[in-house]
Length: 255
Ligand code: PEP
Image (cartoon, rainbow, N blue to C red; front, side, top):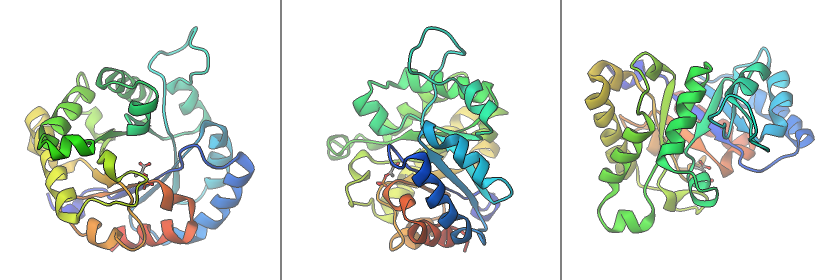
């Protein structure tokens, strides 16, 4: 399958930014900025802005995602949010395994797998994040590490469910640092991820799966990164909070 036959997805990860009131203002700016997109556009907002985001994006080309989900369906898990709760709000996407969750909230490959499966079971589309630290890149274990994270995250996920899975390659050293992987580095690891998906599910699924790059992607470097054959879009942090920048990245993915 050609790159052009895969779905390019540009997803914003707002992290812990924007009150619901501020989110409404940003969405008002984003709607015209991405209206002409020829790719899927997603905004992943804090839980507190999801209702606003779903309401305000109705009838637009913007899809809404959450930044995390718990793996249990309900029960004594104070402070957590289930996949059914997200679906009930009209949320379509969720991020699992973001490196900030792994780093600050003790997220493991096993819990990423449990969250991914719970989200898929509820009907959500899942952006699964994988990526190496700077030390791991310097130790030369990037490919092994990313292969392992991908394999564990996808344990028990069926080939049919893979149509709702997006893998985001996010080198930890490039997230929020202003330091971007080169386009060649991004391509190399995205190829490795596609290869492991091929080993697990076969060529057809591997070729159809959207593999994004994330890590300081911005209006300036998006063209080069997204020009690579196996980079099917981006997960965007900082630049997703500025409508003109996010619009420029979406435009680069629409070429
Ligand atoms: C992210 O939060 O997933 C991310 C890639 O952040 P940034 O674009 O700010 O590096």
